[in-house]
Length: 302
Ligand SMILES: [Zn+2]
Image 1 (cartoon, rainbow, N blue to C red):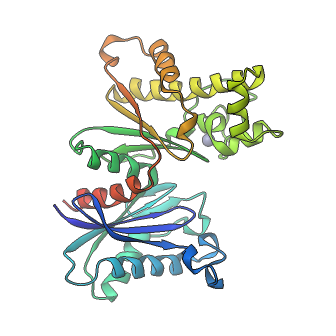
Image 2: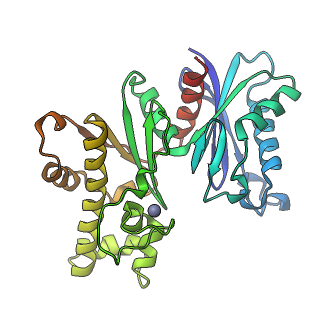
């Protein structure tokens, strides 16, 4: 099994050395809150130009995997649309739009004397790869929904395409317009944390779910819609790509009632050849994406 480096770059950078799909040693983080007096780090990633970010990733990868470490490749996971090592769109880190991140980091490492193959992928795809790697399913199709501020859709193995499943249209109601992308009727416009805050201006999303449990009608109706929307997008995926394994995870995964989702899916998928799908919740675990970034890089290097 290969040694790799996995990097996840969201609002922060986390990087780790991986051996046989397991974390080895300490993680590298930026901003590093153990160094909170370092004023340079106060702005976070959003204020860092793309070149400086690439440089930071090179420093971390070089520190985790110096010459002679046995590492041959590194994978970088980023939210947004990532194709052929290029970040085509990145809503959270807009300065990275158009950045040839894989080539920049690979060249930066080469100038440090490290000849590593670097690949880049979407962060939800990294979660799917991490699930596949940690469950011995690298030979199968694994699909993952990540539930948080936005709704990520990840797939392993990677197949060419934008795979913007979070923007699946799940309703024709013209009032459904809370998706950050501006599109009407989108899954993320119902189930995303940010969209929920826009819908319930007077309540935080956690309060909405809590009030629904206590019987508040408006909140309960919304929580039903939330589950219906996730089931609808999953049912569409089943009708396009077939049944198989679906996983649900992410920062806000505790909002999901899997039995409720299963019941809605049962109502939405009625063709018998499509009914042998499985759905499973995975508790939020940021290391899955790190492991997946490394596993996907190893897979791409073959
Ligand atoms: Zn959208």
